[in-house]
Image (cartoon, rainbow, N blue to C red; front, side):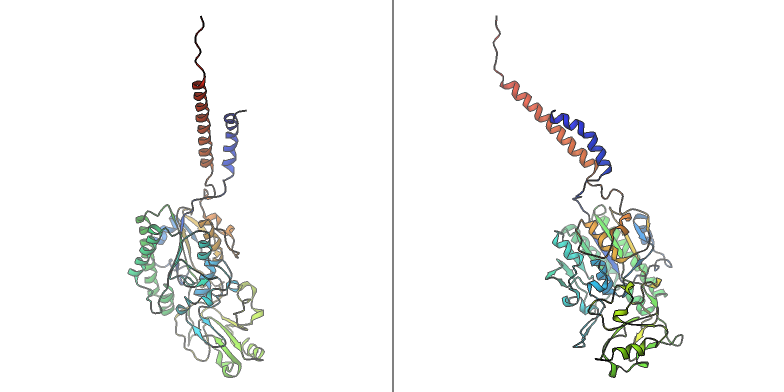
Amino acid sequence: MTALGVLTLLLPALLGWASCHPVPGRKNFNKLLLISFDGFRWNYDQDVDTPNMDRLAREGVKAKYLTPPFVTMTSPSHFTTISGRWIEDHGVIHNMMFNTETKWKFSFKTTQNKTEWWDNGVLPLWITAQRQGKKTASFHYPGGGAKYKGEAVQRFLLESYTHPDSNETEWRENIDIVMNWFTKEDFDFVTLYYGEPDNTGHKFGPETENRRVIIQQIDRTIGYLVEAIERHSLTNHLNVIITSDHGMTTVKKKPNVTEILLTDYIKFRDLVKFDIVDYGGFGMLLPKPGQEEAVYQALKNAHPHLNVYKKEEFPERFHFAKHKRVLPIVMYADSGYNINGRFIIYFNKGDHGFDNVHMDMKTIFRAFGPDFKKNHLAEPFDSIHIYPLMCKLLGLTPEPHNGSLAVTQEMLVDSYDQQPGVLAVLFVASVTYTAIRRKKKQRADQNSKSEPIRLAQF
């Protein structure tokens, strides 16, 4: 049988197979922008007018809420999002970098270029993407300024210690810079971080007019983002995920409650070598040699709203305590209670760091772009599942992770895995058919030209 005949017989079968089995190996992946608004509680948009976020819900995906990892702090949670690993696996266990021998403590912003704090053997998505041929950048995103196994993010910008977080003009300028990275320099994956509404929530509290005003500013910024995407002709080429690291709750203060003050129950000078306290609703202690049991016994029933554990007995559901950096005594307070050490010096009106089961610790997930469904309301899920979703969108082979793509797969358009599919098979078949016909005709023409001229016989 001729090749043309074989193709004629196989073409219907090929078309039937293609309609049911998408061809693997999608080659053209869209770009991805991950935006984090620090401390954006899951329901912050429900008591204020947010037309642009409402538009995103209609034109993209909205999760009912997102559960961050414990401990519900900025650096640990952001690194879970960018790596897909639990905090006890990636090792960024606190906002502060610390050393129990020197007793040094580094604040959140001063840790951003400290490779020794961030690089614990787990690769963030920037590095994984770069190793698979993608161009990546980080704009103020926690962890973006460190090196991982000796490799830096191709482009990163760090916040200065005194950098203001609420300048709306600068927010828009940052978006313009990122759009240019995508269009003029062909970056594939960019992370963009904003320090609000976290700062406002801390300073004024989550149930205040100040917080509602900053949410409206965020909403205007999201509107500007959508306009910028359209202006740069990226609507059909850029997927966007907007999320956060934790929520926020109102701090309980005297005279309404009895605040937690550890020095009421233990003598730091006699029992404690090093401490991480006075930082919201979470704390850790390194007792002096031989004093661990004494510290534990003194604190375990000290305050009705203080939960105290030995490291090895910390609840497994938190996926937190197995890392070597975690100190022997681990504590977390009930929602709204701060853990104060020697003095009550923490004056925030809003805070986080509490158990991630509390609704006030839940946060947001929004997504839109060519690969996301429209007007899709997703069930709540854990932020650890964002990592495999991002790998899927970028066409990357992920590193080992604790997430599952099955959790977020339903957010993607039905045709996502069908490229190339039926159209591709049709195209190949059509080209092949045409080529065979052309070649057959050429051979026929050559044969007719090569035949000798025969003289008529009379």
